[in-house]
View 1 (cartoon, each protein chain N blue to C red):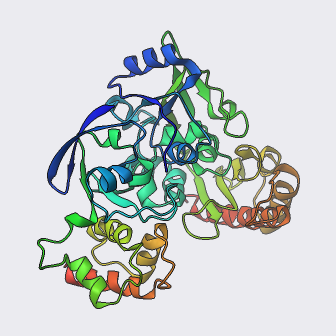
View 2 (tube, each protein chain N blue to C red):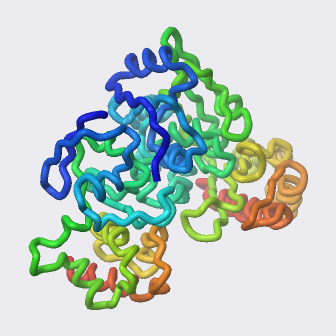
Length: 290
Length: 155
C-alpha cells in the first residue's frame, strides 16, 4: 500500500517546526505518533502535500510536576503516560484510562498531543482532557495561547487550532482531595474502538455531599460529550442508588447523541451509557479517600 | 529521495528512500527481510509488528525515514544462529503455536517486550497482550500455551 507522495521535513526544534508550518500552512500536516494519520494516508483518505515530523523535537516529550499541575509535552507517548508515577498519583483517572487506548504496540508510538488534535469522538484522550479540566497550549510563529479543553474540541475531527498553530503542551491539574474517579468503556474486543465509554469524577465535601461531579462520554456525539445537566444534578446531594439511576437515565437519554454503527445501535449505545454511568459513579464513590 | 541509515538486527544499512515508503515495505523490498508480514496495512492486524528501539510497533504505520538513526529488530533477528531458535520461537514450535504462520512474526515481536516486562504472566495477561495480533487459524489456545511455555523457558 502506498500513500501519495509528500515532502518530508524532520525539524529538531519548535522554532523550526513553526517556521515550516508558517511557510506551508494548511497543506502541511504534523506527523506525531502517526497511528491515525498514517492509516488514513495508506488508504489515501488524506493526501497532505507535506509532512512535518515532530518525532525529533525532543523538547516536546516531557512529563513533569509543576506545583499543583502536571505538564505534558504534546509528543509524550501514550505508553509513557501509562507508566508515569506523577500521573498515577495526581491524575489517577488518566492513569486508569490510558491502557484502554488501542494496544501497547500502538501506545508505544501514539502521542497525547496527536490524539487530542485528531479529535476523534471515539478516542479516550479528548474525553479525558475535558474531564480533567486540562489546558492546552498552542503556539504559532509569533505568539502562544492557552485554550481550555472545553473550548478546544469543535466537532468531528475538528479543533480550535488555527492552520499555523501547533499544540505544544498539556496542563493537567492535580485531582482535588476527596475525589473519586472511574473510567470504563465497552468494546467488541480489547483494544478496539469502544461502542461507548465514560470518564467519571466525583468530589465529596466533609459531610459526604457531592461538591463536584463530571461525566464525559466517548463515541456519544460529534466530539467528547460533557453531560453537564446530569453532573450538575449531583451537586449538593448525598449520592444514593436512586439518584445514580436518575442521573444515568438523564445523561443517557437526554444529553448524549450517539450515531450508532455496525457494532451497536443507537439504543444499545444509550443502554451502555446508562449502565456505565451507574457503574462508574459507584466505583468513583468507593474510591473517594476517607 | 532521502538518505537514511537504519540499524536492523544489528546491521547498519544506508539507503535512499522516498519519504512515503513504509517501514514494512523498506524491510521487505529494500532489505529483503520478508519475515515481517504485511496484512491489513492500517495497524489493526499486527502482522507487521517489529521492535523500534526495543519497543513493539507497527511497521506499516511508520515511514522508513522516521527510522533514520534508530534500531529495528525483526523476526530474523531473534534466533542466535542458523541451528538454534530463540526460546520464544522454540516454545511456539513445541506448543504448536502456529498453523499457517502468517501472524507469527508479529506475535513474536509483540511477545518479546511483553515477556520482558511480565516475566510471570497469567493466562489473562497473555490473552490481553495478544489482543493486538489477529490469528485466523488457531483460535489462540495454542498461542497462549506457547507464550506460557516461553515464559518458563526464558526464566
